[in-house]
Image: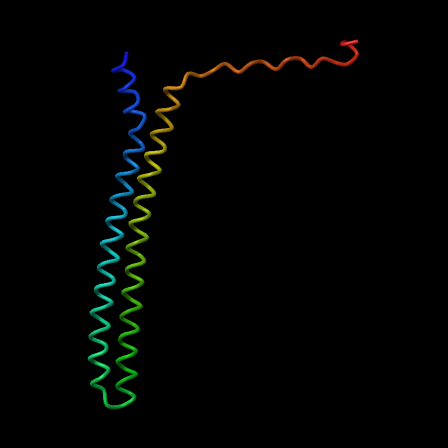
Length: 127
């Protein structure tokens, strides 16, 4: 009986374990993406600084500034799409876990008969 209870407890905690695994994988993916974006931004900023200091006229400075801004914007948009994809995937997996857990819980829970409502006693009958 103890073994059966232990097994039921382990089985009932499986969704929690699965959610923790999803959270860990999601956080790892987001941290990796953040590190990548930060590294690229730092490298691009250093290249921009070198490039802009070598410019001798205003049109050259404006051109370098425009190129840097457009490239930075494109990288931020791509990073946002990647983060959105990671979070959407995690959300979908979590929804599957909750649905399976709910189905399992509903199957394990015996259906209790609903009591019939008692007839309301009128005040006249009480007197």
